[in-house]
Image (cartoon, rainbow, N blue to C red; front, side, top):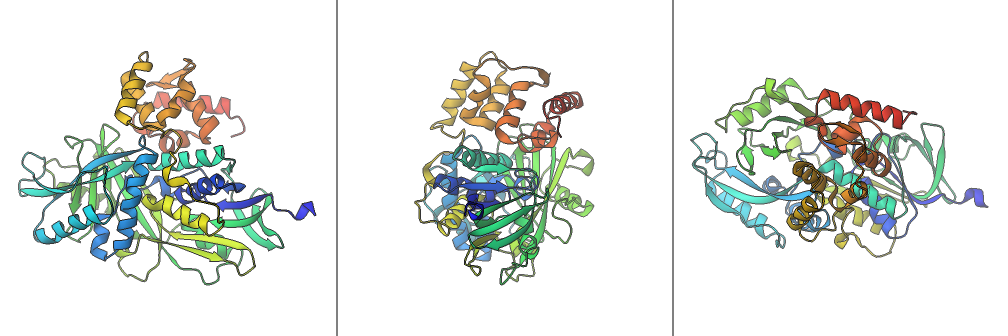
Length: 483
């Protein structure tokens, strides 16, 4: 009977990087897919990272060699899929003999260079720290290469590709219950609607267990550790484009990273978290810790009063029993439950760097159709030579300020032509923010609120005036009257 047929092959719960990556992969393999997210895409953990695609140098000390190797392999792959969002960056590690001896660091960097094939990034080396801006006690250090990423935009382009391959993406849609029936699962939502799907993937991050527990489905699944990580952003004090990885007396590390042209991003902390994952807040002790990390290493000193933005996220780490939250594994586990003779796959743990590999493994458990995502660029990423592309776009759109074209190129890649090719920019809201871009974010990227636009689809919130924010808000109320 038609009423018992599932509406979709696959329903994915959660619009973070793992959910969006799985949706993209599954839709590209021909499955009918719907992704449901209770808030905005990348609305939680996936927009609160340190903005890095990296192997995880410090995980070598925890003997996580397999995790680091897989992350390094994915780093190489992802650079080719989204060169507009993922950029090489040099990291400087000042040497502190009392924390880690030279031989230990050199061994770690040797492994980092050779655990996976490396074609696009240079090898590590010893460097002089003279005139580096660091305290004069630091005479030498080490440099190595990793990548920075616009984390929330990486989620968005995965969701865009999924949608372009037929997936339905529903934001503002909270799953409240899962019930098995003879042909699949009934998925209920907070708005009293429901749908049916043959299979379900629970990629809800910090809520992965609570989704299962609400439907009495949390049988023999792993535990998770909720760990809060906080970051602060201050006016830029770093010279050049190098980032710094700062060893701390407690053996943790803190990054200081050039960010958004005018700023320095500092993070992260690691604190066990027991509160609501929807609204983590930075604590005074975290601010003090991050400021102290900078002040003990750099000649330039910062204070809490200089902070222009801060954010916190809750990482749902796989509970491996380690008492030290900084040592809890960043690896992931996929749990396939077929006890109801139906497929329910739950995602535990993971990190943004390995999301594509996780998605590929997840979809392999659901279908035997061939993998495809490793060599197909993400939307906007079909750019063989980014520097040449940037110069081409500057010339093509010479009527626009060069800094604006650069921002568009770095944010949207080739998709910038979607809203620029007509030559109609529409209303100017101030600070070179135009109606054409905002309409694009609404029409193609599921933007609904001012926060969606200023802090997840972009970081314009760091750059524009209150007047510009107000003008965008007025436009949104006129364009989206139901909100």
